[in-house]
Image (cartoon, rainbow, N blue to C red; front, side, top):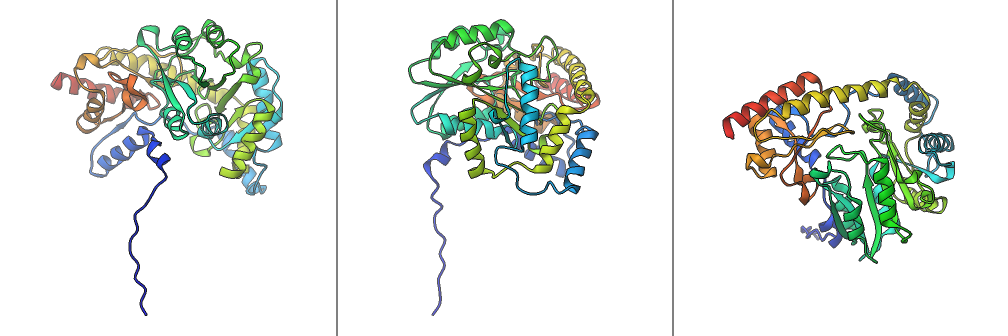
Length: 397
């Protein structure tokens, strides 16, 4: 008797159709394929520091492996790291944070996912920046909530407009997402902005996810957080981590800071989804926060110098105009005068100019008319990118 095996149709849950992606990784794959064919590509698509993880942090991770930190840890994180983060946030934000209000997660995205999973129901409205980090909109849709985009306008230096925020809030608003320094525009909220945002929300029963992953990469001014305002400590979930500040993207280490009762639920989500973050990575995280900070200062200074040079260069290219970003490591030039659709222009940059970048629409509908370049590359490569973009513009515009 023979057994006949037939192919069956893959029947995905409907929610999978609502799940988006991150175009940076797709563009990286296309760029690598071109390189495999012998093409020269300048990579300005991926948002990660091109610096190595600081040596003291690497050594702490290696030592932790040798000492046996290769087993399960508590789901919410090792107590010593949670306390280290609590001490750091207490110092930087001026509010008392305890270890049981900190949850250690593998990277920045879990805090976004857990926030939406724990707080948002189908039919709830979530206000988020657009253009903005694409995972916000993706996960809002995935949870069945209604995405409510808040346009980040160039004429306002891409800073969130508190008046527009107030106009978008309804009785169905459950959560508001803030991001400063902002990806992809590099805008940074001011102290007055934060106060005005708080006033716009008022005493409504609305939680705020404050994505502060670039908080140490600010070129002018200081970092300001809604969490620091009186009365807002328990209404804010603050997201941060080690990826950008310490060039630790591959270490997969981040954290969320929130009220104690919500942190307990985040811990349960960690148990169900990830079990825990790697122990040796967590030990490296302790060293990163407690150890020598000169590498962070050096990296930030380098990004500022690159920003100054790259923005000045972009503004000399016909059809391109770019405001000066005040944080993170991105350039977000206006390309409307080229007459090209953003997606087609990004494709031309890659396939014809040999410069990998992202369409502004990779960050939402309001990104049309813009491109995003990561300046996390060497001065030499940034110069080469400008030369290639300039040559392409001279030929095609």
